[in-house]
Length: 396
Image 1 (cartoon, rainbow, N blue to C red):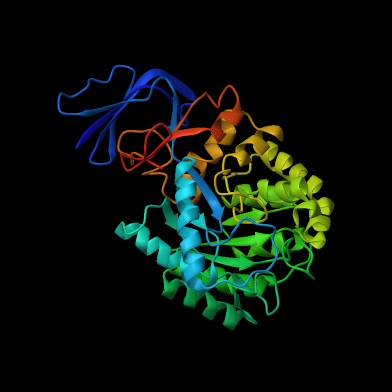
Image 2: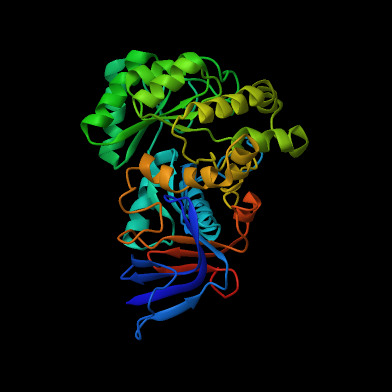
């Protein structure tokens, strides 16, 4: 089946240009031709974009699809209810232009089950990569839904368990964090030898590893242990940046996560210990992001969606925060498209409007290169050449 998407302003995230009044020819879910003079085949279905802006589908590389994005207080909920909520969250992501995610951990391997359902077409959701249960020290950050492990051998076994369950990534917890009472973002948790054991198991299986790491000691432990991406990264110095560039380690800053906690605060029911920790770290976090960007560290978009008031329809607010902290709109868009695709090892098939790649698009009412806030108004989402969301039709 051939479909042509015409009358579109197509953002080329590789060439850093915009094709005005362009068209994209799609055949069997793949991009066949892109340009301003694409011939419309007689048998093609024609979809008029109406002069709107067409981007590659947006990536969110740090999502907790099973969470509620509420006030952060502990809840008791069944796996069935959690799964139902996650399916809704995944659809919400799609409706905001997100076509690919990395789920950063869920209870009881629900993310892996959702991924299998997405692959089979049982549920409509973005394409996914998953982590299963995070690996943490006993009583450490994430222990409530993670896999507690003590000693290198136990960490190695824990990683093997996640891979056996079907995880694409191994997530290790190098430091404390904001969301858990009694731990601090700057405190190191799993030590370098334990991190290395888990990360080695991921790499042996052809998978990658990422780490929740906010304090500098834990970040450096994870880097020396061979991690592939640093998540959050509140405190980093030039040594970290140089090491990350040399070893091609990505930074997923999740600027949105502390931002929404600070904006909503205790008045919205967020526990005071979370608000206190954010107030103590948010300036350093944003400064680290600005310095990492200037240093040339590879950065990919992730929001930590599901943390307090960090909603699933607001992925692209991360781009707004990136621009407010020094990026150009094009650079922020690249973080959510081609750079994110590189992090997830799918840049050959995703991340840009390029012939031979999968036809995953996000259409926006206005041009985000002129005003990055335009990314918050998605008109249409196309997944594999199929329109799965259209703001102006019954497709919701």
